[in-house]
Image (cartoon, rainbow, N blue to C red; front, side, top):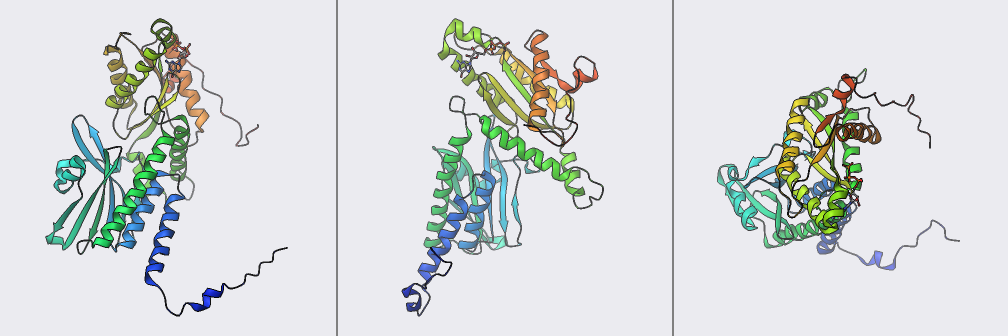
Length: 374
Ligand SMILES: Nc1nc2c(ncn2[C@@H]2O[C@H](COP(=O)(O)OP(=O)(O)OP(=O)(O)O)[C@@H](O)[C@H]2O)c(=O)[nH]1
C-alpha cells in the first residue's frame, strides 16, 4: 500500500542556484496549462491576455474582434487586462461593446486588412502599441493589442507570437466543435451553453429584497433591453427535397444561413437547431424592434430566388426571455408561436406574448415548484 509520504528526489539537494531559463519555462508552461484547460472562449481569451500581460510586462493587453458589416470592418473590444488591475471580458451580448469602424483605429488597418504585425509609437503617451492579427484559415478574426513602455524585444515578440499561435489553434478547435458543418452556424450544443449563460447573467441581476450591489448592473442590463428568442422553420421543406433532391435542399439551407447572417446584427446569435430549423437570439429595447428585424429577414428570404428551387419561405415564432425561465420554457413558447404561424398560412411571424394577450393561445403551464421530476 502507498502512503502519503514522498521521498525527496536526490537532485533536489543538488540545485545550489536558481536556473532562470528553467523557471521561465515552468512559468510559461503554467500559463499554457491554465489556458488550455478552458472550453470556454471568453475564459480562453482572458487567459491569453493575462499570460502575455505578465510575460512581456505590458502596460495593457486588449483583444478586439473584427466583424464585417456590409463591406466595412468594425472592431469591438472583448477582453482587457491592464496595469490598473482591471481584467475585463465583454459579454458577446453586451451592447456596451459597441463596435467602432476600423478606420477610427488607423494603426490596426494593415493588421486587419493585410494580416500584418504593426508597431505603433504613441509618443504623446510614451507607449509602444503592438498589433498582432488573429487569423484562422486566412480570415482575420481580430487583433491582439499589446501596449508597452518600450518596443518588444525579439524574445518577447517570440513569446507573443507563440501564445498567439496557441490561441489560434485552440480557437479553430473550439470553432470546429461549436459549429454545424453544413451551414457554419453555431450548433445545438452551443445553443444550450449560450442560452444557459444568458439565463445565469439574468439571474445574477434579477431583483431581490436586499440587492444594492446588483443594482447598477441590473440597470445597465435593463437599459440594454431584453433578450429575445426566435425559432425559424423553412416552410414545406420536405417538398424541396422531394422535388429537387437532397443536394438542392442542402444548398437552400446554406443560402438561408447566408441571408440570416446578412439580415441580423453581429451581436445577434444565430444557430442551426437541427434539420431545417434555426434559432436567433437577439437583444432589443422593444417588441417592435424585434418584429422589424425578424420581418426584414422573412422578407429577404421571400424575395430571394434560390437556384433551381425558386422561392422559399420561412415561418417564425418568437418570445421574450425572462430571468425565471428555463431553456425548455423559452423554446417551448417560441415553438407554440411557430405552430400558430404555420397554422395561419406560413410565411409569417408570430409573437408568443402577443398571441397570449389576444387570447389566441393559452399560457404555457409553469411548474408549481422548483422541484423537477425525472
Ligand atoms: N436536404 C436536407 N434536408 C433536411 C435536412 N434536415 C432535415 N431535412 C428534411 O427537412 C424536412 C422537414 O420536413 P417536415 O418536418 O415535414 O416539415 P416541412 O416539409 O418543412 O413542412 P412545414 O414545416 O410544416 O412547413 C424533412 O424532409 C427532412 O428530411 C438537411 O440537413 N438537409
